[in-house]
Image 1 (cartoon, helix red, strand yellow):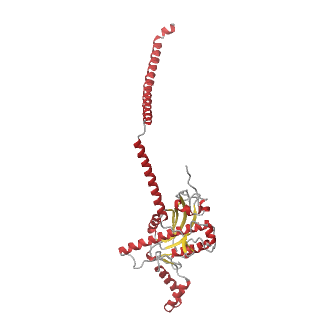
Image 2 (cartoon, rainbow, N blue to C red):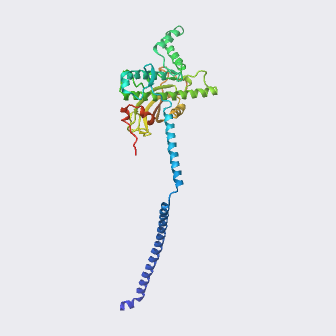
Image 3 (cartoon, rainbow, N blue to C red):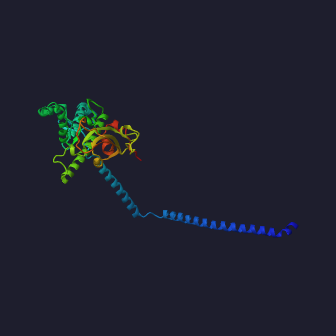
Length: 374
């Protein structure tokens, strides 16, 4: 007691500090509690509002409008799918076989009929003819390098004038003549020929040959369109020659064409590579076909070629590389004086399943994904 009396000032100071701290804490937590309670009341009110709206009866007119809207969406989706299918197949004819004096589609395959009429053999023969017909299409204006016989004939014509140098001069002369004879160099072995010496093949192989024809047709058509566009522009501007030729073409040569012919079922990519830039694989809606081709052309026309390729169907260029072209006296081709490069294009083409699946042999269908129901 004596201690308290002697130190009364300090005791009072401690008690006052404690009481003030308690009051401050109560004020702080009280204000914070009010704030939190206010927030929770707001959330509770919002939830109550949602609950009240859910409890309201749905207006019959609203239901009708929603059904009409859904039906419009379904109809639009069907129209879009049909338009996509038409766009995809419009320039992809099915190989025609002559059977009993009449022509009929090679697909879908009727196994019994194929066996009875030896249609597999006829298919392979017709495939080769269809490929040759593409190369000999007048719109392509194809030319080739001079054959030894053509060079020899030319040397005979020049023998009197050039004497012992007639053969060398004939080689130069024929290069120019061949370049002037068409718009694009394409040798017979430049295109991917699926069948070469085979006389028979299973249905799956026949289907792959059909795919080979389709992709080949698309690439050749892109070359035709590109060269025709440039020729028309030069004729209109008065800057082109009277007769279009390799010397004035955008695409001067198709050096090689390779097609996978099979739908990609692993990670996409040409020839089963690690995966293409698109990373697309065949699905229940479309099949992915990889291809690669090399053309000789001025680089300023590359974008035109790619645009024409992609505008005519569902094509995607997934890789492009360029290299030098051998020119000079020892080169087998003459492209004119404009600088050219060797352009390698790797691409993918999509075939929509809604029209291709019904045509496929069963063994091909079994390797592809199917649409799930439910």
